[in-house]
Image (tube, rainbow, N blue to C red; front, side):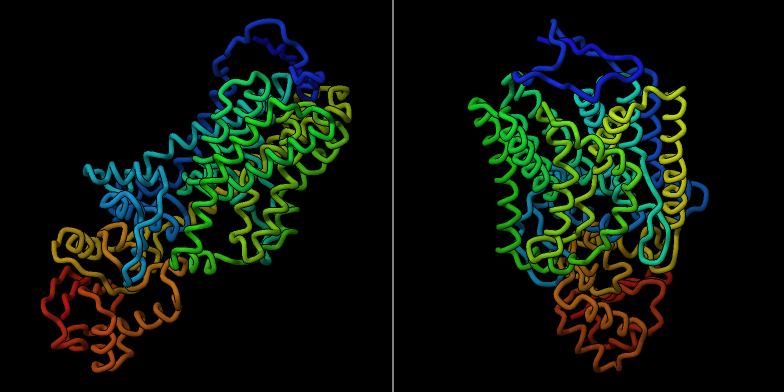
Length: 538
C-alpha cells in the first residue's frame, strides 16, 4: 500500500527508490486521482487530432457529394489492406491474401481484425468495423502515456510536459531533399488509419507499467506477458521492442544488484508470452509464401540522420539523464528504449527485418521523460519563471509540427486522380454489383480499383498493391494498364484475360479501350454502370 507525494512545481527526476525498489515515500494507501482539467484538455486535443482526416472525408461526402471508400488515412494502400483482412475474416476468421489470383492459405490471426470481421459478418460495413477501433486506440495510448509519466516523474508540471510532448512533439528534419516533420514519430499520424499500430504501442506501454507494478508488489505477474502478446499480434515490432526493453532493463538492474530471485517468474512470463506471439509471425514468414514475399517487398532503407535530427531537441537534454543510475525497472526501461530502438532499426536492414521506421514509433515517450529528468539535473528550477519558459519551449516543439502534419494530411487525403480514397459514382455502382453478385470468381482491373476490390467485394484481385500482389507486382500492374488503355491487340488481350483465370473484368472510368471490341467472344455478359462496366468472361 502506498501513496506517492507529488511536488507541485517539479520535484525529483523520478522514483529514486531504495534497495528494496520501493518509491521514495511509502506511507499508506494510494489515492487514484481522476483526470484534471489540463489532462482533459490534452485528451480532447488528441482526440480531435485523431478525427481530422475522418472529418475531412465526411465533409467532402456531405458538402461535395464525393463517393468515399471508407479510408481513414493519407496512404490508402494500408487502409485497403486492413479492409481486405476484415472482409476475409468475416467469412472464416483467419485471413488469406486476396490481392493475388492464386489460392492462398487462411492462416493469419490478428485479434482486432478477427473482432472486426465478426462485426462485419453481422452486417457492419468493414470500414465501420475498422473505425470503431479509433477511440479505443486513442484512449488506450493517452492513458498509457499518463500512467507511464506518473510512474516515472514526480511533480505536476513534469508529468504534464511528458504527456504533451509524447502526444504532439515534432521537429522538422531533412528527408529525401525536403524539410518536413517525420510522420511515424508523430503519434497523431498513427491515428490516421494506423489504429492497429497505435493500439500495439499502447499495449506495450501498459505492459511496461504493469511489469513495474508487478515487480514492486508481485501482483498480476501474468499481465505484462498477456499485454505483450496482444501488442505483438497487433504489430510485431512492438513485441520485439518489449522483449529487448524487459531484458535490457533487468540486465541494468542486475548490475546494480537490484534484481532478485522472485523476479524470475515475472521476467520469464513476460518474455515467453510476448515471444510465443513473435514465434507465430516467424513461422508465418517461413511457412506462408505470401508473408515471405510481403516481407521482401516491404524492405527499404531510411536515412538515420533524418531520424536523429527529428529527435535531437529531446535527445540532447535526455543524454544528461543517463548520468543518473536507474533505481526502478521503469527508469531502466526508459533508458534502454532509445538504444533498443536504434538496434531494431539496424536489424530492419538485414534479412531478419523490414520497415525500419516502425522501430522508432513511440520514441517520444522515453525521450520526453529523459529530457525532463535531464533538465531537472541541470537545475531547470533555478531559472526565473521555469513553468512559463517550459510552456514556451513545449509550444515551440508541438504547435508548428502539428499544424504542418494537419496541412500535409489535408493535401494527401484530398480527392485526386488514381487515388481510390474517393471514386466515381459509376465505379462505386460497379463495385456494389460485384459485392452483391452470387457468382464466385476473381476480378481483373487496374491497380487503382484493384486495391479496393478485396475489401469491398471479398473477391481476389489480379493486382492490388506492391506489398501483397507479389511476385512481379510492377509487371502485373503494367499488363493491366496495357489492357485497359488499349495498347494490346485483341488476340493478345483475349489470351491475357483467359490465361489469368479471372471471372470478371472491371473497367473503371479512365478506361480508354473499347473492351467489347477488344475481348469480343470472350465476354459472356456485360453490366454497364455509366462510365464503368463489369464484363463476365469465359
